[in-house]
Image (cartoon, rainbow, N blue to C red; front, side):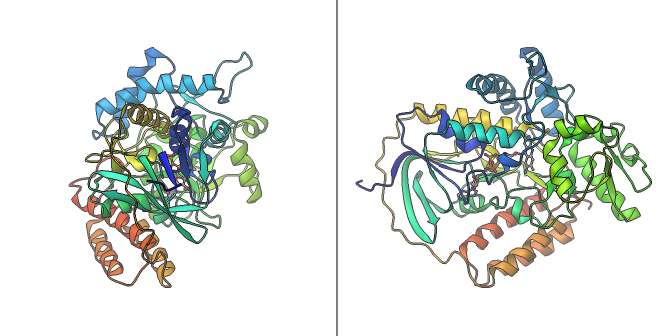
Length: 483
Ligand SMILES: Cc1cc2nc3c(=O)[nH]c(=O)nc-3n(C[C@H](O)[C@H](O)[C@H](O)COP(=O)(O)OP(=O)(O)OC[C@H]3O[C@@H](n4cnc5c(N)ncnc54)[C@H](O)[C@@H]3O)c2cc1C
């Protein structure tokens, strides 16, 4: 093929998973990284708490056990072993490459604790700006071509080969071709009314995979973060990292009562799903706000350890750590995603990979252990690279017509907003089968109307979440069904 838009590897997404694929591929490979908007507009950039990693070899078994315990019986034990064993090596490699993590005065890496970890094993950077610092570092390492402001509208698949991607770039359609394609496009945040995710994360690639007959798995497993400040304007809500509770913050009702102990002996350090449900139920029962009480922190320590939260909340009129912050659970993370094997390969396909939040390796099972997702991105991006480097890909790349159906139509925005409310109400923290059945009917009716492709892809991903929840026989992990 003579087309100039031909690469060895195309990577969809510029978060930790996509950039780490690009940065660890051998330098003789011609690589294209595609992202919507700016490279930093991704969930990776907003990650606060840190990266969970075994402290040393002796901590691997305990990290595995904590991950499996959080996963509520749905984890693939082999995948979890890969996560923790490879994780230690991969994070050491990242540190050796020069990624800056916070250290004490003697130069030792600092480890903090988050819920459901049996010991301190979360490394962090810039206090509570881990994602931003890691992203900055990966961007500084990157030598691949980056295509900004570009939305992938289709995978160019014929039989079991993905020949490339179709992209909507600044009002123009283009096809890009490659020997291997890696999907690293993140989760589904924007299909929920309240969420902590970047606005670029809206589940289109999951929808495209469904249309191509590729399997999504565990899509009922959606995680809600318990401590989010949802009163700000804008779709993305301000997260208050779990590390705050790990280091002593309390969740209290309006009279200061630490009501979480009525739900679980671990109180603030109970698993995320439990804390989210407790807050949701408490608010419903007693009305009014639930707060994060930070008053036990020394002001100077707080400013240094949690600068992002300190300054973001200051802009919103809060004086931390003195003021209590009203909190609510919000959608945070998709455990479900494109089914892959342990080399990040999509089954039935010769040259298609998925890594990071968009993928489902079952490392998280029914509930992700805090700070295991950045680790997953690092580990499985490296495994994808190893697999790509070892394959021959001895097929001829085929050229496709550059044409696409209408991507957006006039009534789409209204339906998109209705969908977000429907998903929050029916496929949220506490779900009922009746509401899920009603939502399914509604989604099917939207799919029958004259809509653009982007909305259709969102609807298909949402439909898959709803259907998977209906198929789920009983509550498990983050998927809580009341009837
Ligand atoms: C506020 C917040 C705090 C978090 N804190 C932590 C933490 O402390 N520790 C932890 O382990 N995890 C944390 N997480 C989760 C973690 O950040 C994510 O799971 C992880 O960063 C996902 O990385 P990724 O590379 O898979 O995807 P992302 O970083 O989300 O990147 C996705 C990329 O795909 C691109 N993309 C999407 N759709 C398309 C398309 N159609 N066409 C082209 N490009 C597309 C986007 O533009 C973006 O570049 C947090 C998440 C949030 C939102």
